[in-house]
Amino acid sequence: MCGICGELRFDRAAPDGEALRRMTARLSRRGPDHEGAYQDGPLAFGHRRLAIIDLSAHADQPMLDEALNLALVFNGTIYNYRELRDELLEMGYTFFSEGDSEVILKAYHAWGANCVKRFYGMFAFAIWDRRDQSLFLARDRLGIKPLYYTLDSARLRFASTLQALLAGDGVSKRLDPVALHHHFTLHSVVPAPHTILQAVKKLPQAHTVHFAVSGEVTLHRYWQLDA
Image (cartoon, rainbow, N blue to C red; front, side):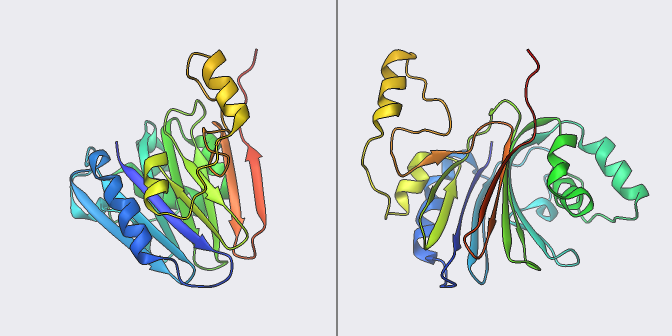
């Protein structure tokens, strides 16, 4: 279990570094092994790591691939990462780590947004494309790993927990009446995209969302359970 968070500014202002530090600190219980931060122009990432697969510093996050111009924060496990790694090696990619995080980066470069269709596991991750200044968020098919976000005309913020988002301040505490109805009628379950707060949403399971630095948002469902 790791913790991820980040901020993307649509007004080209610098992210609030102090807010990101508070958000990252609030995720400390999810990742005691390493704390990392990354900033590139309008984008900033924070990460708390629980080291499980590749225990070396090569797998620390945020993970940056200079050659591909991609940066990643990731929470979860990709069960078939070894098979995907072998396929990517055959395609000519090289690796500097042994875990599943770097496989996500290479897979995104190789297959774009469709890479999530190849992942079997539980995951929530964000990839920053430095070349086209865009952010890609994804969540696993069943929504096992959480991913919350708040969005307005000036910025996007996301985090693994609602508490981490609130630690960054600037989030309205106005309650969502639809979420309250779900909470009291579905035994405390609030289905995505709702949360108990109107200003905060959950990325639904089996969905990706792409944010351009211009503010354009594209939500996509990549998988559906056959009835």
